[in-house]
Image 1 (tube, rainbow, N blue to C red):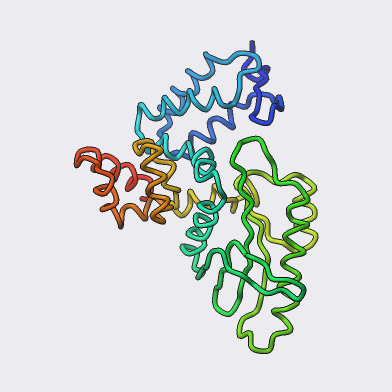
Image 2 (cartoon, rainbow, N blue to C red; image 1 turned 135 degrees about the vertical axis):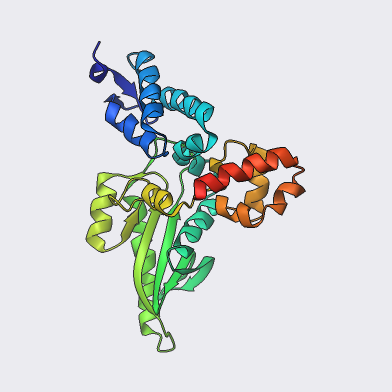
Length: 279
């Protein structure tokens, strides 16, 4: 059977046609060389069967990448690693905040802002020059869920309430310029349509094109600590609890590995993997 005739099952349960190019593109993003990519594609293609899940394809490609170089596998697991920031959305908020810091913003997480009608707890407030941005993060802990139109509807009403109070306050020395909605999954068509219509800035795993969450992370080398293939889940949770959200944070504060009782040999391997990711 032709490879293009295979149907695969997404995490949402939806059936789609298998795309060799999508697999090639996700492998390319890891920085793996042409030969490695072709070898993995050949092996995955040989093991395809009708209805295979995207998870099985991912697991196979991940194992093959890890065998080659652990940091290739780390980059490949980026989407899964963001889910692993859970179960609450707080580490995701800190992760988004850290990405904005590296893009020239000064950020604060979990701030109370007074609206015209009521007060609101805002996930992130970001400042660049005299402009302020209010950012709400919608974190989904399981794959296959999308951010529907109810979310931007709710976020936009909160933003407008805060803006009404902000604009009427003569003591404010900054302008509230924009409201953002950031999610680790995808937006539904209605959510995109409404968000763009009302002027919210939308950022998701794959939107906007060429400046999505995954593209920003790859471009800036700002990988969450959960991408590491060498740290255990317990170690990752310990680091997250100490505000080590980005891999590059651990490069600066590697004494936390000593607190965890990591051996010198293993410490060297972990720091090498992370330095390769961040370079």
